[in-house]
Image (spheres, chains in turn orange, purple):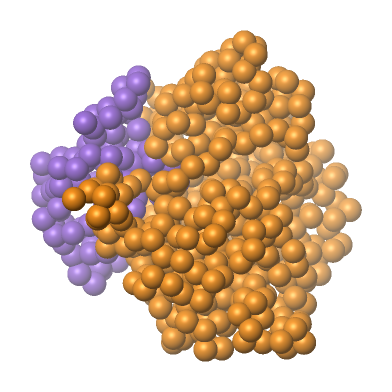
Length: 464
Length: 95
């Protein structure tokens, strides 16, 4: 690994791969840093290694990744797998762990393409073994061909629930139920957005196809569920929920949950980029211009890390950001940049037409985000409950960081990745300070676990 | 409980999970390997000694911390299996 690159890209999902390929094809020296052992990101995870029969079960959208990955492999971009980024500064100094060694490298341009993760929504029992994110279930399927043994339940809200249930069904897994929080109110609010969404009908027709296949297979599909809870002593034994005014219980040892995805903004926060609360997507996202440039010079963001748009949009956004990088590096003039980006802009605009519909339909009920049950563990690492957080706020600790200092919520190994959203919702609810004006946990490096030895190896002169 | 689909892996390695030798596909994550073995929880928590298992599988939740080759607090979902690797359940903070 060199000490300086014209362009460093972080993340090898659709945005990172597309951007790296474009930049490399224009003669720019690119280093692509990836936490994973192989390119594809989460969406195309394991695409190079998955046996044909598995890839076939995962469906056509998954197979789209093959083209993207092979174009990247055929480019001159340097690929660094198993490489974690533990710091990113405003000056574009990048702390990296590669082959167990810590390095500091720098770049003239940095493209953050590290995607999104599943929105953590704490509910009673969500820490029990047997409860897992649906995205995690999909990673097990894509990467290892591992699936629930029998009678899995999928619950929460979002298109991923239907997709994963459909994929499980194709793999011969018995799916007990798919439970979504979508309410009648969501339908009514989403309806005016439907005509625009139908212009990119492949998403909608796919969703309907999944639903129909699941129904025909006898899978219980319910919308408008509330008060989801997981029960068990050492691991999951059953789940309960409310539906149409009555309580229901289902026995299962496997619950896959999903409440949409949110941008992974730890790196952009650490670098000092400006962020804002996006009401429709119910998450924070970085302030970006039409090229993906952040508020910090030389740092661009593309893909779901810049706001949720899905895999196809991420690919276009990656290429658009790459054209901007080529302009910033003096490889292209302004006219060429605009011309090159035109086609991707057109496709991206079309692909994004479905988003307002999805955002209204799959909007997570605010009542759930505020963690209504006092006994629910909000901070999975430090095991802090909603009750303790509310008590801290009642004691006058009226913002997220004060709650953190007082309760240790967000101080564990995940560094608040799993609890920061819920804490912000609870604080906003109890202080009546809107989320748009609230503060977030301060993010400090190392963003990834770093041993003292690795840290010391960066400063050999001082440790002698 | 999890199961493996009926696929023939291209190659395998042997790891030791909680003292038991297990043959697993090369290249997969430790978290995947232990989930497929259905060993129940993979750690207990430091504060309340509660059982936990891998939750996000993508490196963000840190719930899959295990002792790998004697070193505690390893993210099992971010480490690939290696031949001869010893994988153990982590109790509390692991240190």
